[in-house]
Length: 265
View 1 (cartoon, rainbow, N blue to C red):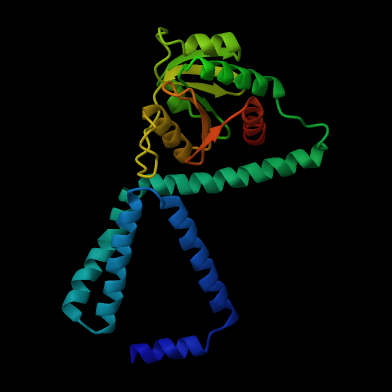
View 2: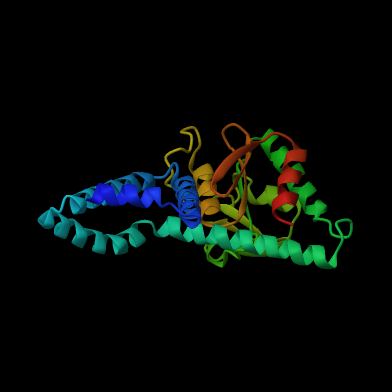
């Protein structure tokens, strides 16, 4: 009877049923991308398996098993919110950031032409020159650049500086004998807000093994906020950036300037 009802529903498929299926597929794909490379994907597979088993048991009219699994599924909603707290927070943050970013662009385009609005190339050049210099000397660095999220809790975890951005100050902060070199430097509103800040470490399983705590911290803050993170490896001198949980290598000063101007201003 259950199979017949499913076949009947499939035969009488309406336009909005197709739209419903496509939207559901899109949301599931976005959920997969959000959880890809994390431990949470294994939990999701387990929950999905239990759900389909519950549907099967219910269809076969196995009342005892159906009742037990039904109770489990009811409590499971609360358990999933607790387990997927980080991923849910990241999901809503990405939605909010994209909406805010698009609405900001609309307002800027409404009042300014593209030739009248230019990003702060001076700061981009300072960061580019500084990172290239530190890369040659293999001086490790971790620089978090805020966008829409203020990151006050991250700034409060370190030592407040509130200074203009300069090449000499950045290099002195990350000098290996400096008391401020351990941790991240946060740039907010085109100023160095704080140094020696503590960042959340990513629990992702797809971060390459050769990357250490500095790179995992960069991925951790970028997957939980909309911040842009610039990293210089102390072991290899390689420059990378992290954005939306992704870790990508940079090879030249022009690439550093481009990634800054495209994502911060």
